[in-house]
Amino acid sequence: MRCVEGALGDAGPRRRALELGCGTGFVTRGLFDSGAVSLAACSDVSPEASAESRERFRGTPLEPVVCDAAEAFRPGAFDAIYFNPPYLQCEPEEDPTVCGGEGAEVPLWFLESARRALAGGGRIYALVGRDSEGRLLEAARRLGLVGGERCRLGLFFEELVVLELLAP
Image: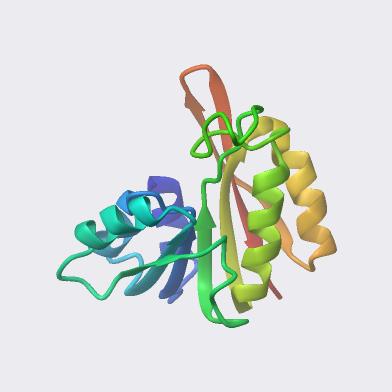
């Protein structure tokens, strides 16, 4: 979260933010409480997770939305979009909270959906497994985004990368 929080601060007044696949809303609430974002929404396909987010967001202007990625939001609605999608190489039927098919399927879908909801000059922050980095950067270029690695994180048995992608 510190990497994304720092990136949002470095990017200037990127205040309309969206987290895709927010689960319980921990990251969105942390970014709001830190002042990194002033208006945020989060999406998750799970009604149960959204209910937990709603509870976590009580007393704030934050709002969870039950939808797939950014599909419920209008084009260009957000200055910053961040996500940490399921990326482990296993079938989503096993555990949809961590399984991303062959590893890049869900992150690629999140990237495409996020691009539509991103305003010009906005940024996408994607926390992905190191194995998916190349495929996401290639897809980002096809979507007209520029950027690259913001930071790396070692977590237990895996290496994660935060990509920072800018919409011109």
